Amino acid sequence: MMELLELFVVFFKIGLFTFGGGYAMIPLIRQEMVIGGYLTVDQINQFIGIAESTPGPFAVNMATFAGYHTYGFWGSVFATLGVVLPSFIIILLIAYFSSKFIKTKPVQTVLSFLKPVILGLILAAGLSVLLHSILGDYFVEINFDSIALIIFGVVLGLSFYKKLTPIHLVIISAVLGIFFYWL
Image (cartoon, rainbow, N blue to C red):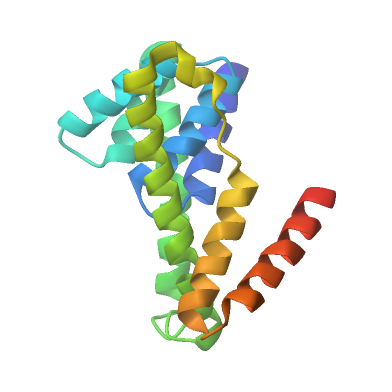
């Protein structure tokens, strides 16, 4: 039962901290499942193909297949509930606090910063699958730096949100890099 709860927590984290849909979840799914010893990179890539060709939401299909492969029927139930529950809770909270919440300036600002980050995660997932299919096991040696990707997304978002000069963007990148890598 503890293994099932751990799998639930892994997919709950994936569902909670990933914005942008199923494809944006691929880097986090890959990281959590490989580091946790649940799946190999090859198995994840196979599940991506299966989840893509199966009807239904991509993230739910990925969680269901990974959970079933790891712990059978109950693994698929716990993994699927884990990945779906965060979105369900967030939607319930947003519905409760009404649509005025989404229209507030702080929420719109956060969403405007998340858009480039989501795009970066989706591109990283696509590139990762492409490189792994071309390079095979040699690709396992290559790592993506998620902090650098987040900094890139923030700076890209700022470049669209505010009309900043390249010098300002370089300075902001440097400050964010120093802040995140020295902490």
